[in-house]
Image 1 (tube, rainbow, N blue to C red):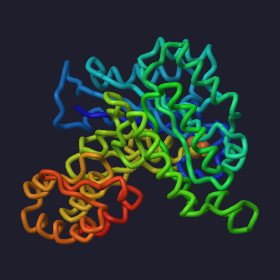
Image 2 (image 1 turned 120 degrees about the vertical axis):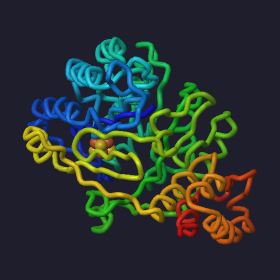
Image 3 (image 1 turned 45 degrees about the vertical axis):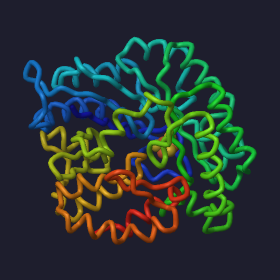
Image 4 (image 1 turned 180 degrees about the horizontal axis):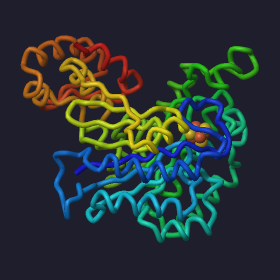
Length: 381
Ligand code: SF4
C-alpha cells in the first residue's frame, strides 16, 4: 500500500532559514484548493500496480505538508480529503498527518479537526525559547508552543510529532536540553529534530553574510546532536532515522515509505512522487501549477533513475535509518560485484567504529550518525 503527500504552499510569516516552496500571500488559495482537487483526479491512475478496492487504489497514509497546512480551514481540508476518498480508497488508511504551526492550534480548530480523519499532528515548535524563535523569525511565541501541545492533548490527539531545530547560535546547550526535556516530560511519542542549515538565497544566509546575524557553527551542531542522541536513548526513544526519534510503535508510517522505496504520489506545487524507479516533481510555482492543472495537464517533470542512481539512493536513504543498508537486497537487485565494492569501501569506516556489519546489514553506529551522509556518499558507485 502506498501514500499521498499534499503540499500546501502558504505560511503566515517567512522563517529566515526556509527554502521550501511557500508564499505569505494567500491570494491564490481558493484557486489552489480547486486545483488540488483537480490534480487528485488527474493522478487517480498513478498507482498502476496497487491493490484496488471498488476500482480505487488502496492508500495506507496521507500527509499534509508545506508550507503550513494548518492554515487551511476545516472545510477546505474536508474538501480535499473527500476528493481523495472519491479517487482512492481510504478505507484501510492508517495514518493521516497534518503539519501544523502552534499559532493555528486553537482549541476550536483542534476540536473540529478531530472530527475529520486527520489522526496525527506534526507540530512545528522548533524551540521553546524566544531568542531562538526570533533568530529564526518564527511566527509563534513560546507560550503558544506550550499551549498548542496542551490543546492537542485536550482535543484527543495522541499521535503527535514535534519538530525541533538545534544548532541556532542563540541556543546554548542548557537551553537545548530544556527543549528536549519539555517534550520528554510530556511523553510526546515522536520527535523530528533538524540541524539548522543555512541554505543559499534564504534571508538567514543573507543576514549572516552581511554580519547582521551570528553564524551557525559545525561544532555547536555536533555537540547538540550528541546531547540529543544520549538524552533520547535514556528516555527509551528509538533513533530510527537520522532526524527522527520515536517511542516503540510510533514511527511515522508515511515517512517510512519514503525510506523503504514504497511508491508515493505528491500533489500540489513542488510536490515529489516516486514509483518504479522513476521520480516526478511538480512545478514549484503556485500560479503556474494552478494554470497547468486548470488546462487538464499534469504539472510535473520526471526522470527515470539509472541503476547506479537507484543504488546510490538506496544506500543513502537506508544508511540513514536504524535498519541500515541490506547487502542481501543490494546483491539481489544490483549483483554481488556491488556488494563486494560496498564492503571494500565500508571497511575504513568499520575500522573507525563509524559503521558496523550486523547480519547482512551495514549499520551506522551512534558515533557515525553525525557523518551519515558523508559515509553514504563514500559508498556510492
Ligand atoms: S512555517 Fe515552515 S514552510 Fe513556512 S516559512 Fe516557516 S519553515 Fe518554511
